Length: 282
Image (tube, rainbow, N blue to C red; front, side, top):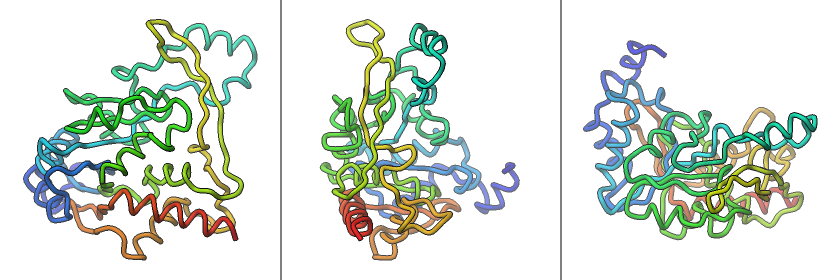
């Protein structure tokens, strides 16, 4: 979308001050620990782009608040590289760079904001290569420290800590299916047919590049087969998110031109676990 279209969408430039006012009206407050997902084009023409949006968020949550994003690793080896011809596998194992929290780019499919936030002075990124998160603010170290190598969306993960800290989730024009916190609900849910993946990625241990094996729910293709309970063409997290909103959970408002939502993390997890366990046990 070009600048003129974005300006028309948002009825003029969306400035830092305008964003601050809209975020406060939605319910974001001083001291909040908030994980956010953003679709910048939905907001309209943001004067200054990612840095303006991060600045506005920091203005609202203040020095006692914390911002959090999901990063992943854009250049991680594919899960299935172990199915490649042996010579190809050997080449990858010999020379693929190790994950580096300071340098490895956030997954581009998550948009501009995760990469922009992880580059901020003072930002902290978790150690897990495939399921990394980043945070900026008073609780950044507490959220990111010692991210579990296995079950990185489960207990004691950054998502679990976000929930335990009374954190919130903010969707700024991002669709409901972007609710990464629902992976934590999947990890906790006791329902039949839960799917897991085992994969290898290179990390640095005591200064040496090593390949480590990881175990997690299948967050890529789905931790469960939702097809019996989710309409064709709808993403599972969209279905869960829509049901959650219809039940009265969360606050809805406009930030710039974007339809946005603010949820309490604990409510998202509780609803997600109950929805999965109820629907998938039928």
